[in-house]
Length: 223
Picture 1 (cartoon, one colour):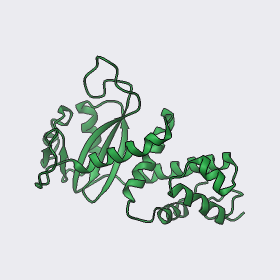
Picture 2 (cartoon, helix red, strand yellow; picture 1 turned 90 degrees about the horizontal axis):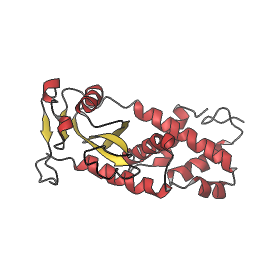
Picture 3 (cartoon, rainbow, N blue to C red; picture 1 turned 90 degrees about the vertical axis):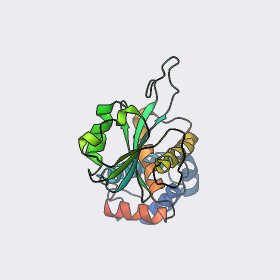
Picture 4 (cartoon, rainbow, N blue to C red; picture 1 turned 120 degrees about the vertical axis):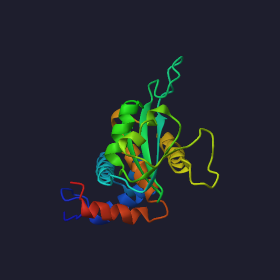
């Protein structure tokens, strides 16, 4: 069957667009199965393929330039009792970059040590950018790497109108945790796909997500 979004598929374009609309509305696979009357394994397979395509698209958007906020957040199981430092536990650590035009970029990282954070920033952010971080020591030394416009946000301090804040990346962390909690636990091997989907949704707030997804899948078919 001819389908410009999914070349190797027996699903019609009309049925695929219906499925994408359900995905755009953030319906679960169970809800979408009931609404579209497609088989559950078909919905699961196409939902997974869409998430893979979204993740690939996200990785094509770096490096980032301009005024940028950075930060990390923790997802999953709570920290191990008795361990107090950042990243001291079983949680998944996510590093985020928020460009002040409203877009965010995320990556899963193994730790929040200085070398890890510096390597990420050096690979993802243009040296001429203005960088805003919190006071974590892992961000020490950015000026020595050539990021001369590095401003630190004081923990617990909200924006006072001077532009020196990390409110943007903090707003994404809140958005992501609110959305992902509804899945009642995501397998670790799939977490990045759900995270990248959440990033894509955040970056397209105020836009027609359904049309944005159709364009992406038309330009880069799923199969």
